[in-house]
Length: 329
Image (tube, rainbow, N blue to C red):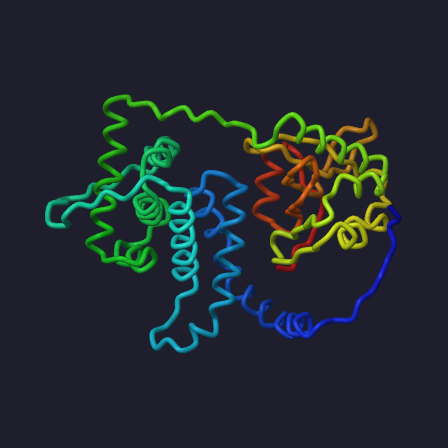
């Protein structure tokens, strides 16, 4: 397959997208003071940087696309609280779709006094909490004990009453203390790899082709309808030809010191791009890619280059400093 360049005329939707870019930049400028807290919240409730980044990006996009509806509200909109509310509701909906354990309800009159959990206790037992508790209980205890929201603020974020939040806290803390007092261990969850041996072989072929700058070889690994997703930008390339003439065009990878390596990151087989040292070992982290494979073809590649919080987590996980890079939001 030949890799060639082509240009197409912008459609009306693409022109509209260009017109909205200044508004999205302004939106990001308003939200940027809260993005670190939002990332930490997403990471705590999902337990996985992969899922946290998905939730983080979905939250930004959902809030941005709802701005026209928000403009009609009479009450003031507080950016941080609203970000957390969108993230919480989206995560709860996701858990429901995954058939997460149902909520247990208790009459608020019988809740009684809710004692706070020590922050160290919360941190040490957090993995157990996430394995045993329904999502609304987790959201309540994380919002209040980890992020210091008041019960009233947490109720607004979760979309319930202050009394209901008190009930959620009571049940979550009761369960946590039962585990602590009885020594009940968290269930050991087998972290089964999402990739079969064949899938890992295809990913390794991608790495080999990239390091040899064999872009025709990479093209043969892609399904005709493959998608490349720039995770933080909400932008995607559709189709093998588009991918090979855009994100995977040879002109982007003329630096031979940039090499690809397979890595298992948080239970998932991934590919990292890294600038190599003179001995050909990874020295600086450049990019992280995840793959979806069906019928022995790559159907989706997700690139996390523009996700600063995720890339920082990957840098710590791989023990590789990230290459110098200025992120403009």
